[in-house]
Length: 130
Length: 130
Length: 130
Length: 130
Picture 1 (cartoon, rainbow over the protein chains, first blue to last red):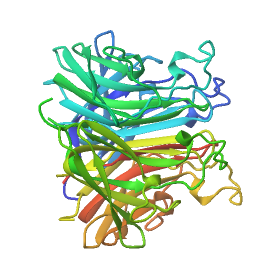
Picture 2 (cartoon, each protein chain N blue to C red; picture 1 turned 180 degrees about the vertical axis):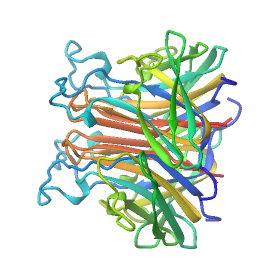
Picture 3 (cartoon, helix red, strand yellow; picture 1 turned 90 degrees about the vertical axis):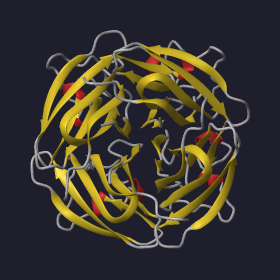
Picture 4 (spheres, each protein chain N blue to C red; picture 1 turned 135 degrees about the vertical axis):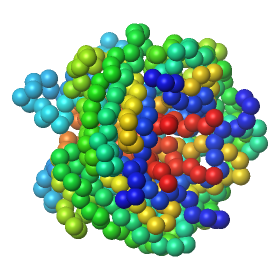
């Protein structure tokens, strides 16, 4: 390919991680079916992308930055559920995210909501702007 | 961050709030699972955003403007269900919305439809144009 | 508002109308819950928009144009199910659509799939290009 | 129409094909309801589009290119499940895709997830950049 595809600044306005899943007994829920929200990040370029994520809330100052590296020619499907440095992402709480990279990336948001079995899905391309 | 991300004019063409939920007994339905539609608005900037929403219908003149303030570095996940000034948003009625701000914002639409349990979800980045 | 928001040329690549619904007994299915696909069109301007829709298929020449008028300051949530001039949209058949207007409009696609109760939803902003 | 609508470079960041379906007995699952993911491609132009797809993963070098032709004035709803040259797309594995064409096309991603009946749907316009 001739050059990496993407943008360096992305935002996702609707963040929300349900606290519960179809079964709250971990032994009964496949990890793939736990309620979760992901930022799927693609780096088609030949240089690793250093990504910083800032989280915004309705009633407090932003949290972050959270740092992630996406290697050259790789994708990372990052679960917001797993972020814990500098702090865990609260459940059942509206949030939003700003995703800034030093290299062009593509970002898509997906949520799997298994509060009631079976699960529901939503996905959208994130908003980007140079 | 160097500057706020976003646009000042957004539109959502598919608005629809189902009138019913999995259970119409409020004692049995978690508020989070009531059928609803949201405009999730992110203001990453250092200045509060004054937002005006105009609603469009198939057979009558537009309603609004509805006014919302999104504070600096905050997100508001606004439920259309809750809008009632200047008038309530009708249920089971196709509508659309124009969202205009004096500062750059990012807008994403999400609907939770719990007419039949379990619920279904849809979400999309809204359309923007300066 | 200062000027109409939107674009004059839109495309939806994933068209598909399931032929069946949760119940195929019309007496038992609310019209709102019949499997359907919509192009939700918003015209925020002060001039009616004349819209032409062309449908594309995998194995035959395009169908159309289908003609729709969206009045000034109105939205039309058009069900592809209802199109029948010049021909009905086939069910269970992949198709795509090109939506061309003489005035700026905004287009969002939504599908309600009730082949298995309860229903599933998908929605996305359509692709636009002047 | 005056000219083909679309872009020549598209990306989908969230690829994922569930390995299971509501019923794993093929005799009981309609092919339409098998868990699958599609890239829906529209070519509104008068020239066939030669499309190359490259798949990206989290822990290995990219796979591809996969080659598809979309004839003039046709749409192809391509199931990633069906790609097998140069190699099959792994199931239950996060991936992403870069879709490059010699002619303008429009790309939309849709996933039907039937791991738990009934199925869930997600769809989004892909990201494009010339």
